[in-house]
Image (cartoon, rainbow, N blue to C red; front, side, top):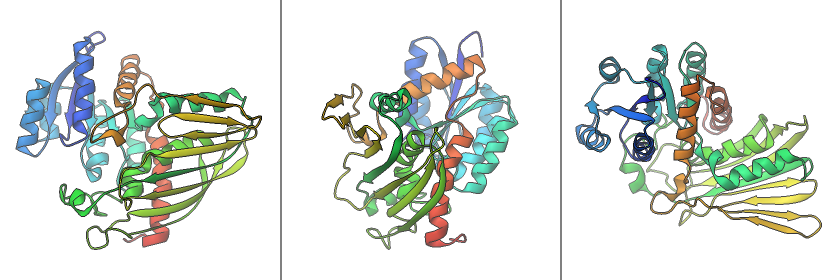
Length: 342
């Protein structure tokens, strides 16, 4: 790192990497970042990303680390490579921004927690929906105390994926490479929000099944959960959660929190219905659009904040232990539904 200028690289040049490259190039235009390398085993994807970034292309992470010595590596690969690639970077004290999930198994996630603790680099995980403006407003309202104690919550992710979606990437829909289905690859962001709002999960009850895509995937496309949380006040509260890829469209994600004095609903906007009849609506100013709108509009905000932490040498708040909490919930449901040797 020269002054405040970060040397940044990307490993994995598939779909989500395009969002990361957008943020990297925006930061480069502002003068705080220099893209120095991209890495992918697929020659065409690698060449396209290298041309877009104006950076060197590599087929191997070690070769890229040796050649361009990045300060930060964005890991945007399929899930089963997350822990190994991030660990290689952290072993060299290179900071890592990791796409969700933390890893495709809990054991690999725990390995990555240890690697991050032993590294001079900073590890962050992309739960970018925490940076959505209405999501942050809800967090501030809960912290402010005006809504009273949290009593419980619920959330749903009701989306559409078909067999063609899984066929487009051979790692999707398989335990060995994706680590799971709708919970691991789509609804994980909403599970993360529930924990952020209600507190760490202390008990998991749930089931997962393949209801819509049997024969096309090994993993689940539908799940129902009941969770117990420990709130910041020390109370035990519950949430219920439903997720499916078996709907006919990608419906808006919904999160609802019940408090002593209000019912709060987060979808695109945030609606607070107070017990005295008052209704407050907070409109989102950052609504994503287009085919990938379900990724949200806040990757860039998270990435900029992560860079600020790296420059300051500070721990990032969405770290490996935070991401491991959500992974533990998901793995618990899988163990109950499919057995530990799935």
